[in-house]
Amino acid sequence: MSDKFDGYTVEIFLDEDDDWLARLEEMPSISAFADSPEQALAELEVAWELAKESYLANGEEIPTAPSRRKYSGQFNVRIDKRLHRALAIEAARAGLSLNALVAKKLAESSI
Image (cartoon, rainbow, N blue to C red; front, side, top):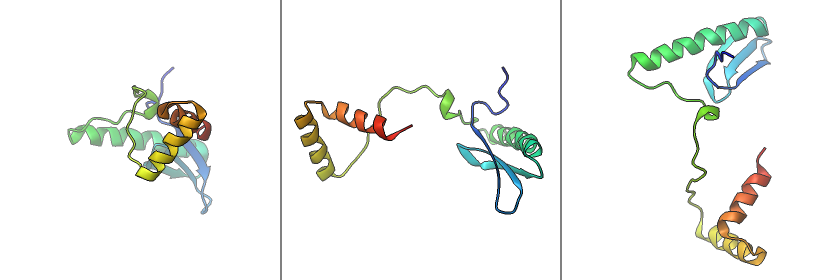
């Protein structure tokens, strides 16, 4: 199946001025207004194509949608040393590694 928006999530809603707004959720600056959801979606398709042309014309790569990127499962986060200490103590009390505790907390708070 062809994906007109290259993996980006499309959001369509009626705004406070009663115009339909279609935008790429991960790139909200790429958007289009119209009188109907279908027209807004068609206009968004045009806006996305123009944005991609602009990236290429400026020698830039077209950004890859988060849903299409490859992830290693690792990232570093800098936190306050007091929070680090509190998490390490909590992990020890729970019999978990600090990494396992943080992964568990992140999983519980997302989706």
